[in-house]
View 1 (cartoon, chains in turn yellow, brown):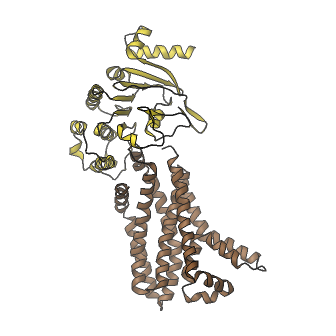
View 2 (cartoon, one colour; view 1 turned 135 degrees about the vertical axis):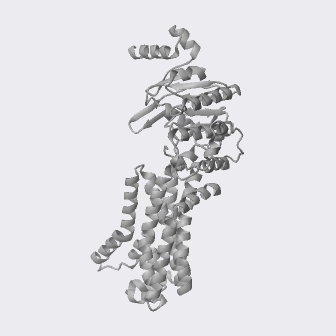
View 3 (cartoon, one colour; view 1 turned 45 degrees about the vertical axis):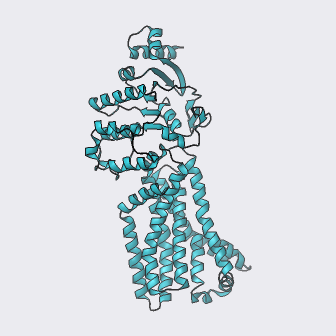
Length: 230
Length: 255
């Protein structure tokens, strides 16, 4: 996959194959192309060249495949004067599907706030709505862009629990994050992007074995430093 | 698509601007009909004001609405719907609500005070102008991401069609006054939807007698069913061309 914004090349030939039933964490420095990559998968950003395939079928310029994806954006932007209830009902309406998985709505007690306007919500509450929406339709693929940023510790715990639960159901979960301890808790594999290239794509245990470190953050730092020296 | 239009309409009706617009048009129409002696005079003044304000309000309202709905569209884009569907729903939502305001604000007074073919042409022209300028507004908004720039482009478009264009036409007519320009002016009229609408309504009023030879030519063309048909076709083109161009741009850009 290639993508550039004007002169800025964001993705320079990223090519990976991701398997279901795993939690894959996309890491990398700011501006490495993590968000761009997930937006490409969602069709929000159109790649300059390359292809994206889900279950062997190209998804470029298609839309129905998105019913299989739940997306939680980094910063949830919602129409300010819509209420939480309306947003959820609208998405439900569009997906033509009754909600299947209302667990997060319950755990985050969103029902109590159903009549609040999106514009009046705090950043954390918006994130909770985003998370609830992402999991609502029991999608096969979950794309979570820095999901716990802005969430309080209890809510973050709830979300992590939910991620692990979904993984057991055999779903593919993509998480971009900067918090290594959190990645260590939920992820199986790590995909590292640097300047739009894949630097490495390994399982966590392999990474630790390679670098002979017990902590993931050290292991990643070691590899990154080696990469810079070469 | 209807579902999304429903939410777009809901959002527009909440803003109350559309209600203010309806009331403004209503006051304007009733006032003008009561001011002038004959209904024809009222129609004529109404025509001039409608051709100035309707494009302006349509284009400014549609541009601001488009930028304000950015979040809404972003939310929808990650859902399983076609982008062109999102775009068309936004377009229809805005143009239908503005047209409804126009039909209530101008259509009803015209029906009450000056029913007839001329009134019908005036209302039809107004609705077409609304659809055309909303399409132009969306085109301006799709071209640039910057809200201020987008509104600037939209205002420039209005300025061009409502004021500058007539100046250019006058200049051409004045400079080439020695040549027969009847068909050239006809072509020039078709290149501006506002002028086209104006000519269509004017020719149904008696004032066309004052427009000299060109007026007579226009009358012979627009007076026939054929001519009116072609004029409406051109107005339809004025809706479709900017709409399809901007829809294409919208489906091919990053959000």
